[in-house]
Length: 130
Image (cartoon, rainbow, N blue to C red; front, side):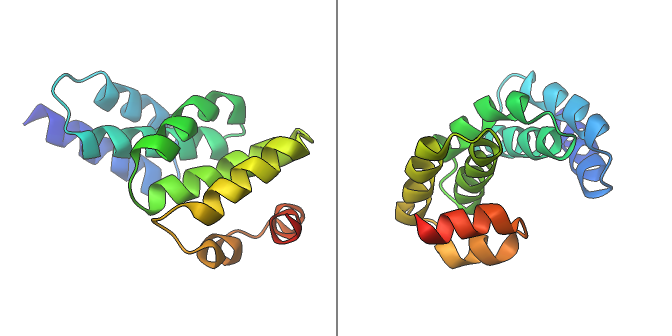
C-alpha cells in the first residue's frame, strides 16, 4: 500500500539522519488523506524533529505546538522540551517558564527523563531553576 511506503520512507530518512529528506517524506505522509491520528502525530513529530535538527526551528514550532496538544505520549512531552529550547534560544524566558511548567505537569512523562536526555546545559539549568 502507498501509505505504508510513504511511512517507511519517512522513518528511514529520519533514522538515517537525512533530515531534509525526512521533512519531504513527512510532508508526503501528512498530505495523504485518511491518516489515522497516530500516523498524523508520527508525521508531525518526525517533521518537527527534522526541522529542529536542520536549524529550521521556527518552522518546527507549529508542529511542536500541535504535538503538545495531540500526542498523548512521550512525543508530547518531547515537544514541550523542544519548544522550551527554542524559546530559550530566543531569550523568551517567560515563555520558557510557562512551557517548562506545562512539561512538568504533562501526564505522559517524567520530567527527569527529558532533563537527562538532552545535553543543552543552558536549557537544563533553566528548567531546573524554573
